[in-house]
Length: 637
Image 1 (cartoon, rainbow, N blue to C red):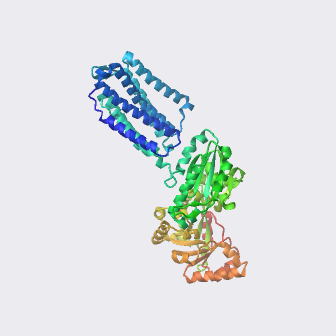
Image 2: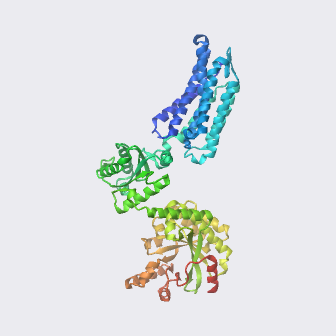
Image 3: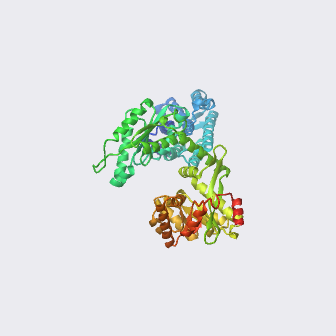
């Protein structure tokens, strides 16, 4: 034993000390799992140090004495076998399993620790675990009890990682399990060949955990050095699970984009840092989180009764100037709202939704003010959540319906196209208007999947009902700006058309003025690829927004759809009628096709055809109808 090579243990001690320096030098993560990781590090360091000292003592047995060596070596053995226990405890903390609340797990841990201590304590008298014959080290049957406990703990760890892998916010299960597997192999090598490599493999495990799970950089905002949004749910998990009382103050800086544009991004970052420092330095303050570009959350756990006072104090600070790095004085207001949990919100998602709604309300109605969410009527938020639930349910059950409203060609005197319109019916809410559920789907990102589903249904309709054999030349499909901002959107559209054997000319994509105004490089690229592929584009609801002739000149539109409210106003007001006539004349001069929406009477039909509209759409011809009814309508014309 005195001849064992200590190189691996020296390396283990060096790297463990390095990890400890990193750990202690970074922002402390206020979680039980973070403290459990610290215990694991100390356990691993103690194991490595004791192994080095024990082997030194083995070489100086005559000087130190057998009893001292035996006791120290027993402590070293206990420290090594406690590593799997502390590791399992740490992993359980990561998935928020409290062993004190689970009798079986509590008993398992207490029994494991007690059994290891008992085996090693009795070993001095009965040689149950190991013996020394001269310089030779021999293990006895008691060691197999220790190895069985280690194996049980590692098995529990493996099961927890596999079963709860989706709960790990940062940990990558595969690298961790890879290190764990090699750790078991090194344990077998040390047990059978007496090569001390276990501590080095524990170091590799700790490095993996530190990199993926305990690195403060993953939970800290780089600009403000405060915690980020990604960490907020993890931090509040136990508070919600144990129904502990706490409060949150949301601070939204007003007109921060103006500050960035006026003073520059560097000055903006400096102001954000100052705001974060101010919030974290407040008396009675809690943890500070940066939620968005100009929004902070202050989580207060010990002084919940002072939420209102704190919010007013923060608002008053924003009435005073902040200084940029260049010394410029910047004054900006902040809109605040605060919430008390679990009184006002019983779950994390409910808290976030309520605060988002409350901040938006405060910015619109009392900019720079303070709002307590308990004073607000949250019925609109509740309705939005009901609609969101209905949309998700319809998506899961494939219950979204596509109706078709025919578009009449003045020159051909037939229905030459149609607009595809999505319809949603819920058992509890009844028919839900697209004006209600489309914005919600755009807000939560469901519009991307919804758009693909609608396009597939349209293409299936074109293929199954052989639309190419009718007078209908194409179907107009509304595409959200959110969809166009997705990289690779054009490729998805092409794939769907090819899957259903639909020609590009049979699809016309409608986009709104909002899309043209806020178009990014990705939007432009997607539009360009689809135009080159052969798909035509329409500008929907022209006249209802802020787009002007510049957008029409620079975007590859083939059709312009004039908003129905513009059409209706033209029949109520002489000035509006003149404006519409000149607008249509201009669009005709630009060789663009014009679709008039909202046609409801014979008078409207005749007048709009007379002043130059190429296509007419409205209830005068038909409301939006299901696919089979639409085919009957086209066949009967």
